[in-house]
Image 1: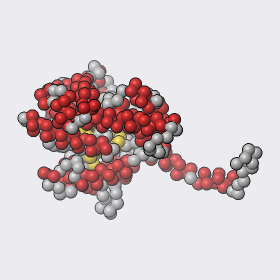
Image 2: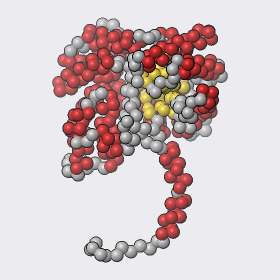
Image 3: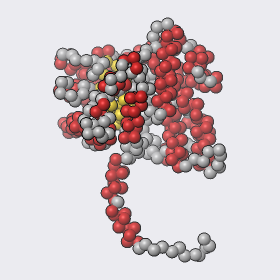
Image 4: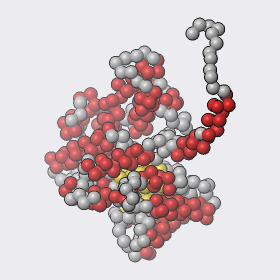
Length: 426
């Protein structure tokens, strides 16, 4: 078009205004239901510890046991590489980072379990355990030894255990407030959800507790565990995960897949209950689509094959765990459960290898996109968003360092946040 040419249109401005007004409600609903990634750190795993086994030294004890397993069964980078199939280039950085992580912050997300891992107990005993857990957590917050994320898994909303679960939640939260306040990284887990009404009941509990203690509305959020078939497919044949998220009214922080309960509810024999079974893949695919864009994070389940016994047996269990974690990461499940201290070396090895393995290519593609330099792959804005998210998760996990990301991509953290559609990092 030559300079000075007039661009012709046929629609009156009123049409545009009317269409905008007619879609204002949809615009508001999209912004409310699909706010996007919250921009906060997501832990790479969750460790569940039975409430009666939880103590002030639990986190350090897990770290020490994990280090002992690493020293005994993979004391150097070459051994770890041979066991897990790491390249020579990856082996050294991964081994070094795993050891440093186990020394510094062995657990990222700790859940004190009052459900399956704890079982039915006399009320006085569970009351005492809930109060003790609150006091230990509060003390750890005060001396900065608590994991970044910590909380409890209460009993579910089914009739047989509902009252007990509500009381444990109340005792724990009350104990935290009485001892100093709710931790910034507080996480609560609601298990065995079958119907949206159970999620709404949890919302009401949170609301009533906030009112009773003068907390800001919405201060308390919770995770929803997906471990029943009804949480995936309702009695009328409709997919139900999105309804659970909706019922949480903005308080849902995560969807956690329960490997063994869900597999059992589908009739899968114990020998075949695994994170990579077809029923697991189906459930997690439904969860993934339902959570997309909502800001609700996803977590995979766990393997119950423990890295214990002679070295050959530990290595076999490590290879299995490492492969399952890498599989989850490739499928955009960036968090999972760990059931034993000796799972921690391969959890972090898988996470670090995943991000370091793809780092150079991702950074180069992002740099080419930003500078419009072209290259072998023509990336679009959505891909640039995904590439930025990949680098940000690598930074958050400790797999990547800020200086190397900036050097390779030409982008600092605020620019990555912007490309990923995240709020600016604090």
